[in-house]
Length: 366
Image (cartoon, rainbow, N blue to C red; front, side, top):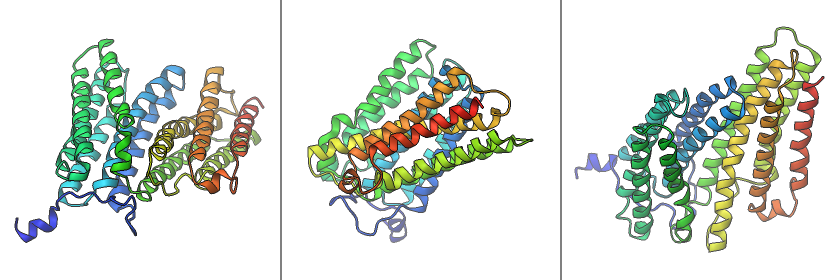
């Protein structure tokens, strides 16, 4: 290989052999990648704003899970293998394009043509991930893991692609099988967390950046609700302040209260279980933040006219409950200092979010 090309294309290697690469930080490419994915979540959320109902929530939740899982697949791969060379950047750029395709197809019913376009783009994303793992199969220490993830990602991708050409309800059954393969693969590969560790500092930092960008989108939702006010009432002003305080409180609890971005070493099977709890708990956390953001926007927008309907209040309250439970789970498996109560306790977390929910409800009935 010519020297010029060798500088652009580097051989794959396992960067996290010791579980921690001193001085490693999130790259600008990774940060850009995270930003695009949160923008895709925001795009999907525009339809939840128009249909803040159980049906709208179910639709949003499914699309959100698929977007988040795509982000997680790339993130877990890059924390182990990212060489930031021409091949990796090209595949990352392709994934950015595909998530944009997913976002613009997040319209219409799940049984319609747009949903078919969404899952076809998602299938392409899984094929790209399979290609990434196939590329690193030569790294001896992680060969088994790479082959397993490449094969399961390819099988799931094929099922997702086939489902795009199948009408409902058959499409939904194929989705269920494919999603089970996607979500279940890490759980059946637990021993590889010990044998082929992720970077103990880099991976939590990626989660933290995604969290803070998602919280930023919730703050945008609050500001959108504020912009709809022509004549400010005391209830509208109080709802706006409460919305900002709620976002700030979640940020505080996540980064300080439960020490969510602490280094996470996996040296035993017990550590692996704790890591899975920490990782999967982010799904209800992120989903709750996104749904609550839309709900708070509705509160601020409509508080001077009429309260939210019962189903809407139930969705908002459930979203905040999801955030609370997720933070408690993350706190349980986080750093010992957090579990000893050096920061916020679990009771404090529950009481804080519960009081915010109660205040939101009372404002709406003012």
